[in-house]
Length: 239
Ligand SMILES: NC(=O)c1ccc[n+]([C@@H]2O[C@H](COP(=O)([O-])OP(=O)(O)OC[C@H]3O[C@@H](n4cnc5c(N)ncnc54)[C@H](O)[C@@H]3O)[C@@H](O)[C@H]2O)c1
Image: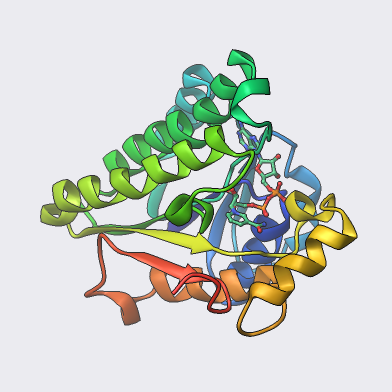
């Protein structure tokens, strides 16, 4: 039995993605630092396996514990959907080292740890690894030096490991979401929000489902010739 492992499953995009993947008939492993147990109960169906773990992607011990458990159960993982991420916005002159480190740790170290451990489970069977960057990484963003550095790192990392893992038929691609409604964007002041919408050619924010649909495609055989790429899902914001 093969599984798709999702990080950040309790978040705005993660929750909708998990729902869609279960609805499409996948077995899933839901993980998040905010326990995804309730979500796992909500999504429970008779004919699909839904596992859940409390997992901090930046913490080697936490990651190792989960993968040891998967190995002990001889579970097969055919896909990683790595959505866990954080922002700690400040301008450079006000940013503390702790704010820098926490974002780099979760967004970049977490990407390394999750990709490496998942790829190790896919070398015999192949698989699809989906990482998450941001449009902010393409052009920079005021007040987000830590976030932009981490997400730019994700793009370079994606291209490199896609080259390394292709020989195992493991595809690696990065999502580049624009402005998507989720708890991460809920706190943006109304005026700033409206200013952002004006810049989007499609004149609306993205929804978590807009991202989940692309994830479903990248996990499927319909994208079997796509690796090492970044896919903008941003209503035309950055073209
Ligand atoms: N929402 C947007 O507009 C947008 C735009 C560009 C990129 N993204 C990226 O998309 C991804 C999902 O974002 P979202 O909008 O669903 O945000 P969100 O804040 O709703 O979800 C992020 C999830 O990651 C989890 N998380 C945080 N730190 C973690 C850790 N150390 N270990 C494990 N899980 C951890 C959180 O608990 C949360 O459930 C993120 O990587 C984000 O950077 C979002």
